[in-house]
Image (tube, rainbow over all chains, first blue to last red; front, side):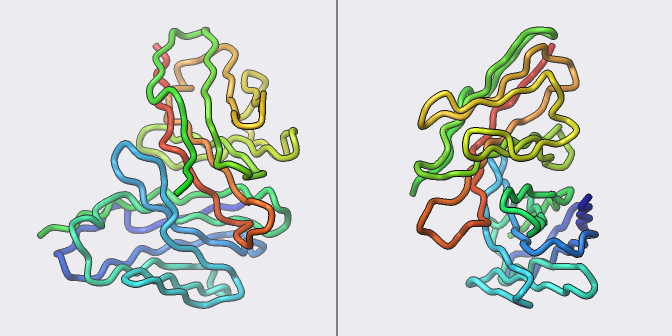
Length: 114
Length: 117
């Protein structure tokens, strides 16, 4: 089955700097890669996703890149703000069926200090 | 904006007791999921549900677990005889409304924290 590895486990950045979180996956059939943000006491919230037919996607300060050959994808947050502090999860989903169970990475605790 | 809701937010139970966790998925969504997150660990897939039947389940989802969609709005997870190791945050998720293009995006509820004593 799919295995998703995520690094780093914690990331401290100064406000205004960039943050990068990296994930690798094992199943070459995976074709959908969402990123979720989880704030304390809340459920994961989808912030951006990418499909395997695209190499990069950007939404304001957030971007995701995908390298299918190397089986890795990354989340980039630019101009970080204190409200970006949260746990970020990457996930992967296989395209072999529509059920689409998500396999999650272990999460990255991002702390943005003013 | 529509969202997935879950009740209760926190459930405390004694080992061996039955619990039912409730979810109201986003209206008109067709796929439903339960995931769990043991404290400090990954979010893990438990089960997916489509067209009134289980479409896929993980190894975790053994005979002690069951899911049901008793009416047009609720989606429940039942644990028949809880064990200490069932203590976790349980998340419900739903996806896809007919006529929309986002068949992949899953939307999560806020979770139910289950504590088994």
